[in-house]
Length: 475
Image 1 (tube, rainbow, N blue to C red):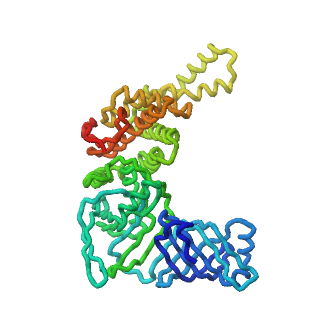
Image 2: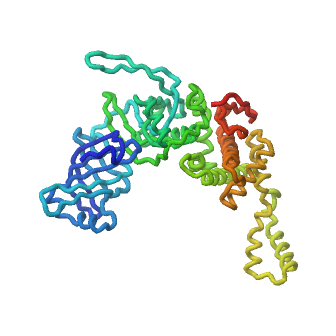
Image 3: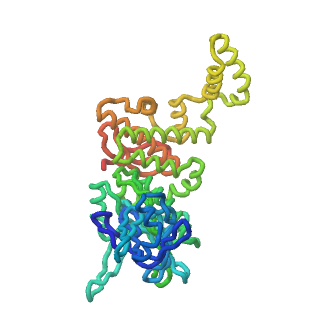
């Protein structure tokens, strides 16, 4: 019943037990159940139905006819006594149906999430999360004692300690961390690279802690320019036994090696999280930062076309600029324009009829609908005011070049340049601007990775408090 690794990926978790398939018509089918999660986060549930069960249900006919999904959920109890239940939608991906024999039938389902829990739950001691695609260097030496045959051996590793508004997150590398990082970089893959141990400063349940890990992973994703997320979570009690587990098929993209904060420096990531996290919480809803960060990752995704990434970048610049300008009141040219809108409308209407006597009513109506746009600053002027308001020191010549690239991508779906080097320079110019905007918006001043537009090489720079940049070294 177990998955074949070469077909589905490396299995990292397996739970076996007995339970039921609950159908949407409220019928329930008893079966043996195996739940497995692979390293990409995908969750497969294999259900083994006894011959008489398979032959007695209309579900089999539905599967054979490829009709709509009829399974509501899968639930039961594992061999070690934990209850489990699938959450959200289930998809049938494979079926072995034995209608006229004594063989068992099997269904393989793709699940979105499965929750497991102990019926007698005690007070939680700590929480542990498996996180994919996070590359890091530890800032703290940790010792672990392992059993090697009859001997106990001390092992030393470096973990990363992150201070957050809700407590401490200790990031421990997987035992084969170096090999994992090399592999996902070479293959643009997805894999669990670390476990995060959460030590809370306030009391929370597993779901609440998981939402905090979502926040932390989002900021870590921003810092690395690649999607970082957790795919399973465990709540542990005093005796070191998990009392609640969540495994989820999280959206995890292929690894991209395009960091904003240098992963090999001991202190940079911890400093970034400590400085940016409180501001992120304060501004998250105001600037829709969760979606903005996801779009930022789209713009940095190495498996997408350069033009596609450029389009994502200019759309993000437009959105963040408009949100910030509206929030801070400099999007309009004339402040009281809205109060005089009717007067301007009547004047424009009279002028248009005088200048174009043959104009149709629907054409005039469409022209008058665009009146608010007359009072909007040009993209370039808005860009200059935005950068100045944030406190960034970016030359006007660079902002003009950003405007030219934005217009070309927005209107022609291509870069202004025709050669590959010129296209890359335009793309990296957009990324440099977005990087600095995010850092300044989140109140971070410190070291970050930028792209030298002359050499197109990565450099480790210093963003000063006054918005100026001091170049330091190549990476």
